[in-house]
Image 1: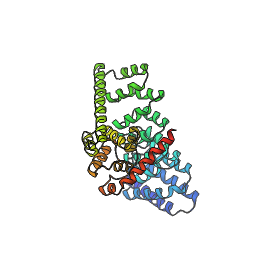
Image 2 (image 1 turned 90 degrees about the horizontal axis):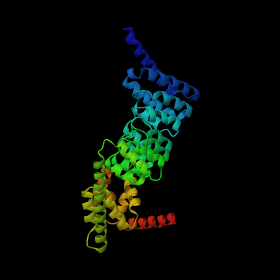
Image 3 (image 1 turned 180 degrees about the vertical axis):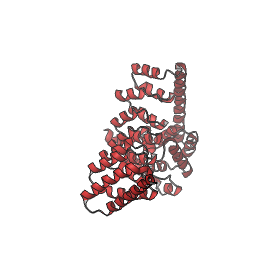
Image 4 (image 1 turned 60 degrees about the horizontal axis):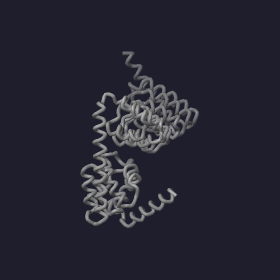
Length: 364
């Protein structure tokens, strides 16, 4: 019976310390209490009552901004070793602007939710992104954000991390960033999760020696099958490109309607081709437009669609495909018809003209 009383006594002491911490006005005493409470929580985390967990979450998240970075980092390093933390505490430390505080939780705490990692990746520094890229496991929705925002060092970390998992969109983005970067190409070529599509996209970018190594890495795939798949993909891509060019020409001549063509391309899940038609109608570079549509704010995509005066049904189908292909737009909710029709088409067209002028100025 005595063995059962000790945890109860400890839990009562923890609750008392938490209450004292919340009321403590002196900075040095707050730091000392935080250290003591952190140690107590770590020692008895699996025995804490829901009330004590709630109190720990409330007190620590409110007071963490009132202690120095060194003390926050020390607490984060200890807490990162736990199997489970209150969600608020984990989010607060992971999103700390000081990377010395955030890094232990981001890299080592296995309990961080995918949503928290995505939020941190979208709003924090390159150092935070690099820490996320080095986690034991990085899921595809997280890598989508990291590969979109990350700098070269983050790409090197991500590509070299065997625990990083990629969607088709994320791998394509990563491969795009290997162009002209031998070190990054080396890491990507060495990955064991390359699809046939990825291999086909990599081959034109890398040296003959590296291409040979790529085939060695993918030795479990029949060479003839690889070559056949790549050739079929290239032929299909060429046919799609030629058909898309014909569609664009038909729209310009007035024989075809933009609404009908983009609706057809979207129904066939050809986002790149639909964006190519959109870019041609706007007079913008298709890759620049694709980046705006897939990587920008949802308002940017709506504005481009409105500038060519597409119907809401087609615009909504386009946005829905974009979400399915590459995830959600930041933290924004999917648009509604009222959001779309509120954008004046003439104003949207003026914005596009300004974008073209600015790009010309940047190019010159």
